[in-house]
Length: 124
Image (cartoon, rainbow, N blue to C red; front, side, top):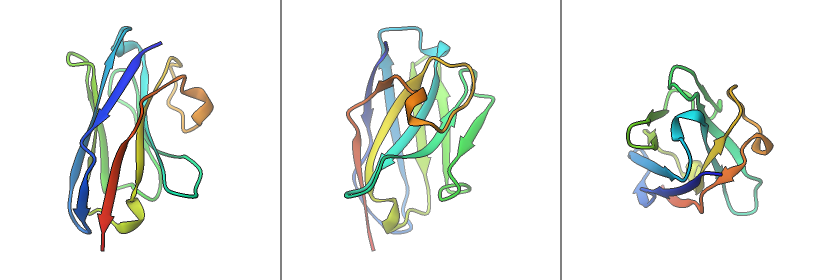
C-alpha cells in the first residue's frame, strides 16, 4: 500500500480558493489512480474528483465540476485539488485516496489507501 498525507485545509470565506495537497510514499506513486473524497458531518463520504496515473484523464462530481481541478506531479508523488469559488456546502473533511486499478473510478471501495483527511471550512 501507499501512505498518504493531506494538507492545505483551513477556514475560508465563501467565494474564496484553497489548494489541497496529498503527498504519497511507500510505493511507486505513478502507478496509482488518485482521488479526492469528502465527508461532511452526519453525511456519507462522497466522491469529489479522480485523476488517472498519467494525469491525462480526470473525473469530477457534478457539484464541483467547473470549480475544482485535480492535478498530479508524479515527480513529487503529489496530487492536488485546486478549489475555487468555494461554497458553505463544500465544508467537509477532505480525503486523498489511491487506487491500484487502471481505470478512473468514483467508488470508495476501489480505493485501497486513504489519508487521514484535512478539514475545509467555508464560512458564509
